Length: 85
Image 1: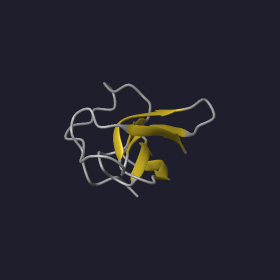
Image 2 (image 1 turned 120 degrees about the horizontal axis):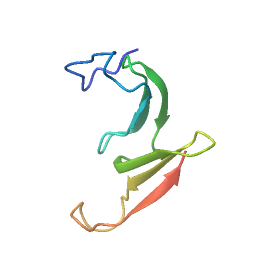
Image 3 (image 1 turned 120 degrees about the vertical axis):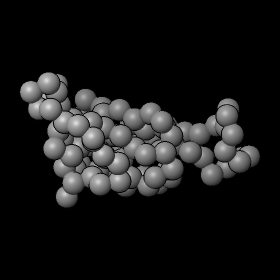
Image 4 (image 1 turned 135 degrees about the horizontal axis):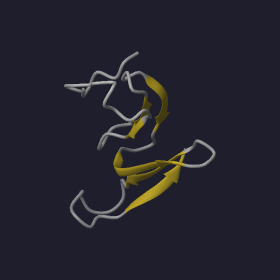
């Protein structure tokens, strides 16, 4: 399965640095790790939508900032939480 919600307009394998891309779309319920061909290598089901930052831990778990359902509506400065999956 290739990730189709976004996309790469140009991919020149001879000029690209080999690796993976880790991302969790804002307010989306999944985090993704994709390879250079856009194929999903791993995905994580999130409890709430992701917010900007995610990293892989040394053990391969996803460490991410998440939105909080508590408190005021989502505005700059609203609190959230960090979670490891």
